[in-house]
Amino acid sequence: MAISLYDVSVASFLQVLGAVQGFLGKGLAHCRETGLDPESIVGARLHDDMLPFRFQIASVAHHSRGALEGAKAGHFAPPGAVGELDYAGLQALVADARAQLQTLTRDEVNSLEGGEVLFRIGSREMPFTVENFLMSFSIPNLHFHATTAYDILRQAGAPLGKRDYMGQLRLKA
Image 1 (cartoon, rainbow, N blue to C red):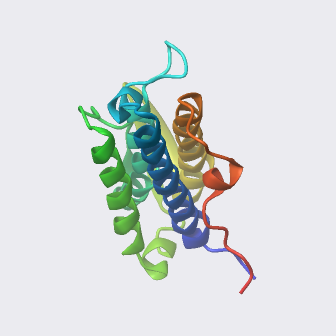
Image 2: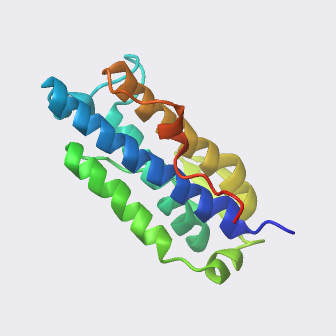
């Protein structure tokens, strides 16, 4: 059986977004149980030279929903200004990205195969095929930002484990 572009992108994005929704929920529950202000997490960083939790979560949405929007449009750029989203706003951003991806059909996504995507960052341009853009750029970025957000919550004491990061597995029917 051949694997489709839909399976490697949308199905994978939905799994990660579902996991992120789950660990955001557990992170909020931890805050409530311990009296930690969830807004203190929004600006938290693993290291001074890394962007904050807010950016990590926004990048999860950008490298999933936004990646497919970029594949359709033929161009993609880093996320714009994230703004001052609070914890609830970040949860809504992930839920919205997930809901938008769920509206995409297999045929719609699979028809993008063979297309081109130009990634622009400043004056630098990187040409990709849609497949290589999704598999070698957006999926790794998605996991990097999801992992960093997970790690910030763990650093804040949230009781998360590997299963929380993995999300809903796609088991054999």
